Each structure stands twice: as structure tokens, then as C-alpha cells.
Image (cartoon, rainbow, N blue to C red; front, side):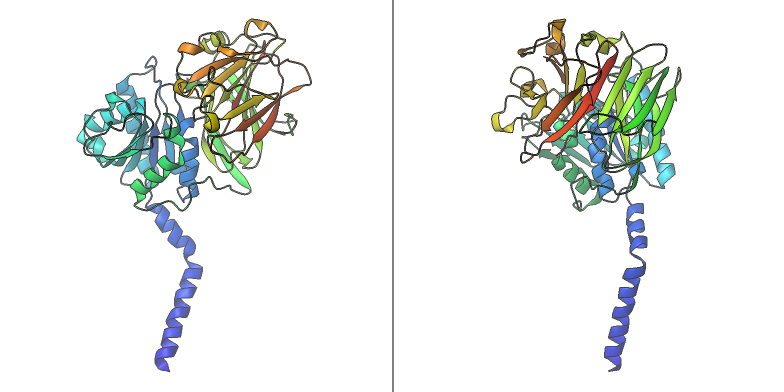
Length: 441
């Protein structure tokens, strides 16, 4: 009987400990998770890791443990040495803030060249990195593995590509940008970093208050917005209209700075409109988002100055709407049953001309080309045929003071799920619209 009573006492103590200390156990487990840094590729930004950051957070990583390293991939405003120096500073800051011994590093496309050169530049730098994930790099990535444990992930293309000494995985059904945001890449990277598979590969919604932050930057240079203001409003996706007369947050940007904003307090189930107005002009750029679902510190508002390179791509007129629909995953229009759908006012703009798989188009600019009040989706327009990762469509959407444009999207392999939202049909002579679509269903 004494043995039985002792056994019951031990079991009761174990239950009590599990009941009292699960939070402490979780906290101790999370304390061992190293910070994660993502380095984007050409014409990219931190937004390409937006979904993956939230997947890491859904598996216990503090949102502040995951950062992206923006730089000018055209190397007009920075040199490679400056990009590396900035990475030094980021790693030192994250190690100090988290108490971690090292960081985890990922690079995509051109970012693999940046990362590999960084890791091979000195033993001191490599010593600060626990693991490195090389995502769909080109031949410039180098044939030999960096001096840290390396996982190389390859998308569509030749399976002869490899990094000697690394673990090489081939996700042959995934397109180039898709490899940065896919479930398969997240699962592989998480397992590589932690030694175990993630509990979930989804973006787990958070109830109540969340934190939203990021940067407003000039595309494609990733330099900070200047002499402008950003007002943030909740809006109703069924009507496109703001649900608050006053912004939930406002940020002023002066003549210098990196364009950082936030965090501000928001909700994960709300659609937000970021209204960017340039000081001294009547130009407004509206940025519309689907619900963030959980804390998101990687928001990137991609824009340009009036009369700058982005304006050269878009024909403006007070009678029609101009917009960019952007997703961190290529739009496919020539893959039959594997196509995506992007319909504006009932017309699907994705086809073999506008978005062939080989175009790798993540952003699609749409406006009334030549202002003839006609839609012609049988040809791409302007400079878009020669520009990487973006395409253009001649789609006439009338502008008015009170009307709307309806967008319907269906992602490939999403079991027919359709997302729908409306935005006001602002006249393009003074308004530009960017609509950011999630890269997952």
C-alpha cells in the first residue's frame, strides 16, 4: 500500500507540475530558438518573407526574432561591402537583444550570392551563423558549400544544380519566387534549424490585438520613403469604403530615414488601407491588404515619387483606374488546370500572353493603355515585356467619384477557394492603387 500511495503521490506531483509550469517550459524552449534573417533577391524586398515569418511565429518563434535584410539589389545606392556591413550590424543587434549565440540565415536568388560571399568572407562572420539555407540560387551561388551547415533548395529547372557539401532538395513543381514563400520551403528550413518538424505549416490567426510594422520604400531600390505621410484606415472589403473617419495610425516621413513605421495596434481579422500622400503634390498611393491574421513586422509599402520610374510604366488619366496587383508567388496563366485566376470587374486578366509561367510575373500593372476606353488582353503593354517579375495588361476600368472595382482571386491548388474584395475606382491622374494578395490560400 505504501508503494501504491507513493506512486499516486508522484503522479499527482507530475500532474501538478505540468499544470503549473507549461508556460515556463514553453518559454525555455523558445529561448533556444535562434533569430532568423532572410536576404531577398533581385528586385525583391522583405515582403517576400512575410508569410514565412508568420509561419515561424505560429510555431513559437517570437515575431521579433525574424527579420529581413533589405538592400538595393541594383547596387545603385549601396555596394556589396555596405550590404555585408549592414548584415554585421543586424546580426550583432539580434544576438544582443535575444541572447542567442548565433543566428539562422536564408538567402534567395541574388540573396544567395550576397549570403555566400558574406559567409566566405571571414571566419568571424561564419562563426555567427548556425545554419544557412540557399533558396534557388543561380550559377553565381558557387559550387562549394559555405563554411556552415547548408541546405540548398531548388525550384523548377535542372536537378543537376547542387552545392557540394550541402543537403540539396528539389521542389521541381515550384516557381522561382514561390520557393521563398512555399510550405515545402518553410518545413525544410524549420526542420533544418530546429531538428524537428513544425507543429503547423499554416499561418495561425491571433485573436484580439496584434502588432503591425514595416517599411515604406522606393521600388526597386528599397531606400526609405521621403517627404511623405502614411495614414492607415480599416476598410470594408465588401464595399471598399473606410470603416473609420479617422486613421488608426499616421506616420510622417522627412527628408531622410529608412522608411520604418510602427508597430501600431491592429487586429488580425481586419482589412487595412495604407494611404501614402507625397508632400507638395496631389498624388496619393493607396495600398490595400488582406487581413494580416497575426502580428506582422515585415510589411513593405512599395512606391515611387511622382514622375519617377514607376510612373513611367503607367499611363495616367482621370477617366480610368490604374493599379498594381502583387503577390509573392508568380501568377500563372498558361498552365490549364494549374492556373491562377485574377478577375477585375468579372474579367480574368491572366492568360498565356499576360502571365505565362516563364514570365515569372509577381506584379501585374493594369490600366487603360492609350486611354482608348477598351480592354485588350491579347498583348502586353509598354515596357513590361522586357522587365523581370512584372507584367502589364490593357484593362479599362472606368473611374468615378462613387464607384468600385471588384477583385476576385483564386490561387492554384487552393481547392477552388475564391477571395473577393472591392476598392474605390480612384481616377489614375491623381491616384495609384496597390493591392497585396497573400501568397497562400
